[in-house]
Image (tube, rainbow, N blue to C red; front, side, top):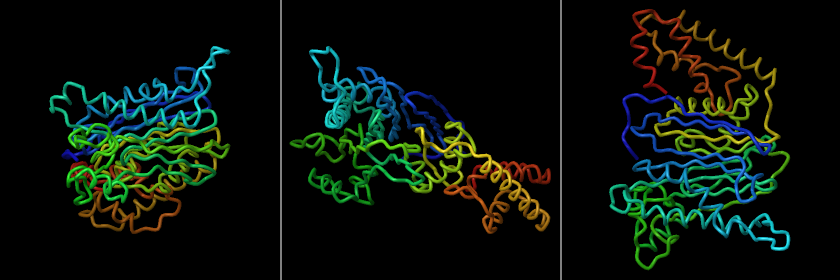
Length: 388
């Protein structure tokens, strides 16, 4: 949803941190959209006796940024502060017992529903001025478990032992169970959207789709209920990723895990890896806001001298290919789109898995700019943000 800019806004917001045996990095970019509607949250160490627990989330807003921003500020508190989540009090020891799996799952759901109900009363929403909504995908990491909660089509994946072993489920109106709920609430699914308009079947906010009389909050056209998954942690866990659909539109689960894994062998900076993902997705053709959080575990791949050497050799091969193209082409063809097209026709060994040539686009642009005749540089600058 939303209009597009003439050229993308490529400035990035980055954060990172460490604690509880975890590292995290995040990156967000407005991209081609007129407004930045994504938001995020990352907290190492939770209150209420859960200092060894951590929380990470990505929120993808639509029709405005109010709901996504509020979710980023308040969802965690609504989850951990409610009695369902916090477990039981050991009266004799005067300490809180760590919440059970059932407590956590029930508490996450309660937190989502309470926040959704509370946001109805925000003045802009109550007046009808703000009609925004937001997806939400979050991960809670305890010392022994991973809890994933998803509402909408943002997604989280887990890389374990070199493979993408888990993914949350996107909530789309065409999914059979989602479509059934929508129809039971008197709605329809047209052009794969709720009533022909909204592309997700679960979200926080979007209250114009939540006013069916006689139906509970989880039975509305659009439901705020999260789908919750629980996994035991493993020493083979490498990293988990949370991202909005601006990332998933152009990368599969396996492609993104493979790409991140390969980049982690080049740098220990999770923020830098997140930036590589966002840039690569932009060059792959994503037209949406983009946000990604990567959380690393002790089993995360480490920087490899061999991988760094191979990447340098790849850059040298790309440079040689570009110079060869320039030598064999007429000057009229000396522009970025032509060079990129010609490179796609080449069998270049060692391109980043999942990223391909798009992952090397910044290097390509730099090399082409150096080699372009002076009279072509202005034309090239105009093409930089219009090719993929």
